[in-house]
Image 1 (cartoon, protein in one colour):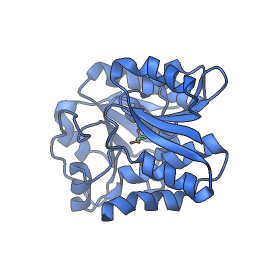
Image 2 (cartoon, rainbow, N blue to C red):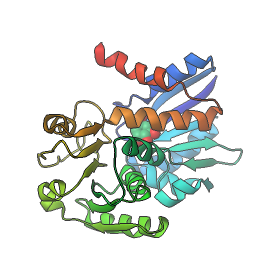
Image 3 (cartoon, rainbow, N blue to C red):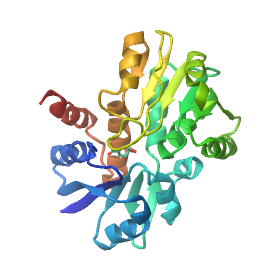
Length: 272
Ligand code: SKM
């Protein structure tokens, strides 16, 4: 049995185990995928330990994605540009890092109609936000980044502007989020507000039918409710989870991912 897992803090809410185990079962792959809670200060030893235990692949979630990228001994070009890794593949000597959040976001935002030159507001400055910034800049949007940690937002803009040719990225005022969201054609939440155990929340935002909203957090979030209430086009955290998970599955197994079955595995519990 090949072992896979997701490291995070928190991670108990993660639906990757049921989704990835459904994919392995569907294709008859002898593998098991588990949730591995790892405290922020223990990520280095956790990655070493998972390698020593024989894990074949890992997903990495909040808050470990940037650190995981710097612990990998090889990184794909997207993870390098993003400065964060959410998918690790075992090599003989260590981990090879990938970022599947970034292409997942790009595909979903493009399908939702995000156009070149559109004004985009990204909230957050962690690993998920960096992936969303890459996607928004690849689509040619005019990116504004608002985060409580102002210095992290400025660093994100500097890094991503250097990594994506022609990028237009600047920080925005977190204290003025309502007005920033109002001026944007696309709003992305890359923060971990509303994850279990996480402090803080976004101010209540209002949306219109001509806007696109993407929330990385899955479940019935306040932001998703507000987007639906305003008639905005919503990309849900579940859609991002399925897409990034399908790309990870293919990186690990070399097989096309049974994406419809993965999405169905998530619905199963919602209805339960
Ligand atoms: O990037 C993904 C990660 O691969 C898995 C995950 C989860 O299990 O909740 C969420 C995202 O951070």
